[in-house]
Length: 315
Image: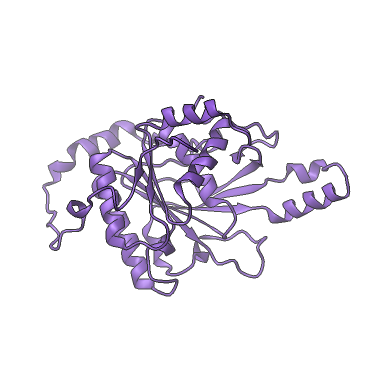
């Protein structure tokens, strides 16, 4: 993708030293009146649900993403959690809430190619669509470019920089295990997630943390919040826990029918290709699952088996 203009943030192009953690944390003892406006807003809003929405209308009354919170996006490796989250981020940005994706497992151009197909709604985007996406992304979408492991203090600095200088509202960290020493470093995991929750609260941003779950003996079994790799404190500390699960059994059944040149029967097509499961929703009452179908050409998840891709950004 030549001529990319989506801003790329790297350790070499920005001086993050001013955003590193201070050696002595400041005491935060404040008078109750500090929260007058926030308390007044909560009374005025009542039970009204607020925050950025996911692309699927069936979720709008149940799941939202507000500043000051952290969501854990988890799933078995290869089940599409980063791809689904990427589609959600297009939606956040299109709602006027700028996004920065920090993926330590995928090059920025790969992330952009996936975004391009999701925006184009097909697998052969035109050069015109490339320019359309790049123009749309100005002021809405940033990428942090650093592959491999990264130190927590750098993540701290990047998040502060994004919030303070770029006014970004959603920050994706993909993934947790690239930011700590290993799966058995429970204290490191707990401290890192604790740092994220503190930053989200202080900076009024929403942090999306991608994490893997144990594959287990049966990939057809839907994992829960207690199946996260590493420390159990990870799910305890965050505000929302969302699990992305692909229906591998259906995929195998469909592939078998196609090899036999048979039509896909109604019972099989009615089954979802994936589930988005909410196992924890600290600031909402709803917990449950959302059925999704996968449109291969656009790399989009949709909530209708008719597989009509969504016009994510109006291009």
